[in-house]
Length: 192
Image (cartoon, rainbow, N blue to C red):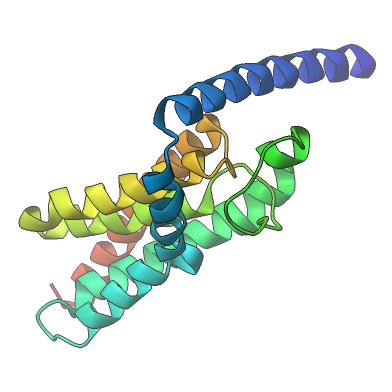
């Protein structure tokens, strides 16, 4: 029974990997050009360790009026990092596209961690969700940055499309959890 389940699981994973790779190659072939080759590494680097979102959160912390939103962003980022980088990547251990397909030429150094979910995408969508829910005027810029970072990971071929989708879902989920938990806590403490 266990052997049958393992074989079925491998068939499913191989099928998903094949579809993911084909979609990744279509995206890359349709969008690849010298301008994006030079720009995408910079866009991707904005999401390194959630840097752009941490900086934005620290700016919010400096203002008493927006401090709670800054705290929500930081908690969402911490939760996202724990779930995506600490749990899911190590549990699933999905190899990155360039590991499975060595012919892929990278424009950035090889990321050392596993592929699923995209941590850059997860942190970007966690922060963008908090920002959008608390600053309606910032909804569009926040999600444009988040989408650009997510797309850069596909363009640079360090993630599959399903890694990006997984990152989006993890990020939004963590943002909603962080906001709900903190608002409940602050309400009980009479802070809001």
